[in-house]
Length: 281
Ligand code: PAF
Image 1: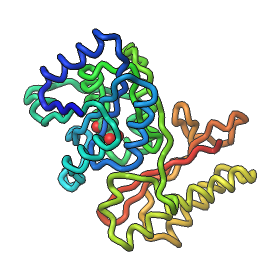
Image 2: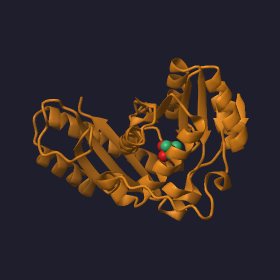
Image 3: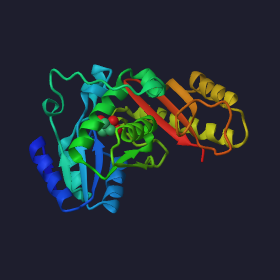
Image 4: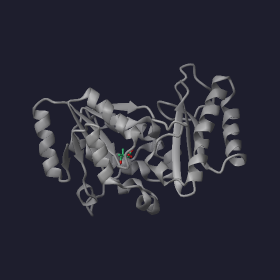
């Protein structure tokens, strides 16, 4: 497995891969890898000649400095996991390489950056967009892999890929869950034993809400049920629960016949913020 920390070396390597007409699959990560990331790597290996993974805790997507400081980092374990899972290349840049003091570029994703995650993490998607563009420009992938757990991120990445005319196929990969249903996340490791049990309320609420909607209950009554569940029965502090159209993430009042609907949820448990979503289909 090749590891690059320098932009010039990485660019040269990518140039050579492209010159040999080999396809590149790209898995951008912030490290603290878990089975969810490894599924992205697996999928990329299946579909491409060369799989490149980046590990970079991107400071511009953290609106909360404590969150950035506490974000789990373990390059050694990450690198051995990637090697064991047959990743070909890792790009591991420093902050100083990815951002310069006088950088001024700022992106705007319109309504998409002000709803759900964007509402609770102002500026988050501007940072995600910026780093994804930089990484796409360096890795020059044919395909890039993103987990559906971060549905809003996936939607924004699809949008920027389309609007910036990148010739990159964005491949969504399904959320991987722990045996009890908790969505895998790098932040799960920060939960105390008690919080880990309480975190399951996100999954329970999504499951129940999905069953209710499939059973014909109205969107309004399901929204009410979930709010009530977190107010009365859970220790988790609910930030939002929304029922949205899966394609544009707009709130819906009724379930369309296409059933292209996603249930999106986020909440705080002590110092740890967790998100999850479930598709109605
Ligand atoms: O999903 C993540 O881990 C990050 O948001 C990403 C896409 C690697 C950008 O920093």
